[in-house]
Length: 175
Image (cartoon, rainbow, N blue to C red; front, side, top):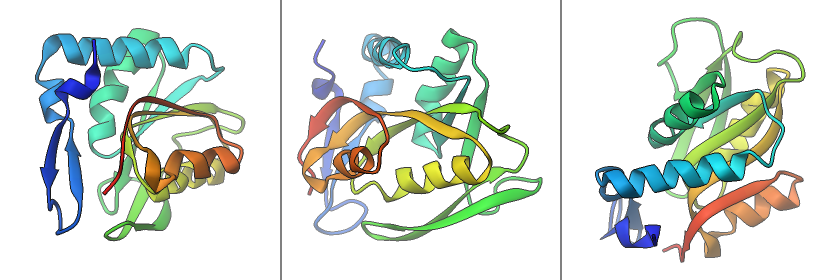
């Protein structure tokens, strides 16, 4: 199954000049969604990890299913002011603005090995912020898994250069 066939491309969203890669067309197809989850599970089994984290919000769709299948705890990395208890916070740059993500301070233990799942990597700013959150919490990043890599925006390559392991299911040029 070619998962690329299930990704809708929307020009000039969320702003002019961006070609948005929409995963809603993938997740509404039960076979494509199941295939995506199966591929993430298969690739993740190569790594030693005891927790799964995902980046709000589209990463949650994939990570919750993978967490269920692998019987691993699932930790949500959320946008600012969405978590009720004490949090660690990281601010970061996006390709079209700035953002903040947070995690509960009690989400990770010292030396937890964490698989991070998200729908897409572009420049890598969000992924790097996620790694920082896990690391300031005492954990270690076992691997990143992205459904889509916008390869010419170099996010995956930048993560690899920083010593992280990265898995991408499909690739598109970034715009």
